[in-house]
Length: 112
Image (cartoon, rainbow, N blue to C red; front, side):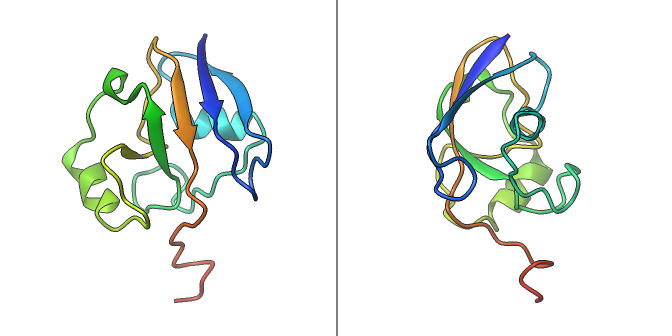
């Protein structure tokens, strides 16, 4: 099992967390399976930016984002070089440190 350190997020995980993921599982599925309720408005289909995360350690162990993910990441709030959509970031053998941004753009819940 691969370990994922989730840095504190005042709304979703105030104390941070240490969770485990199976290699081949997405970061988003691992978070949800461990009761960290990250938004995922498109149901993990790479059609929004609500599951945007920052991979603070272990980024290079992930497959690079494809063009579709890159296109959506360009619209994410707080985009950084280590940004990924957690529904597309597939866990490998290397442990990760993940930060969930304090804000996300959700066109549905914000009634745009």
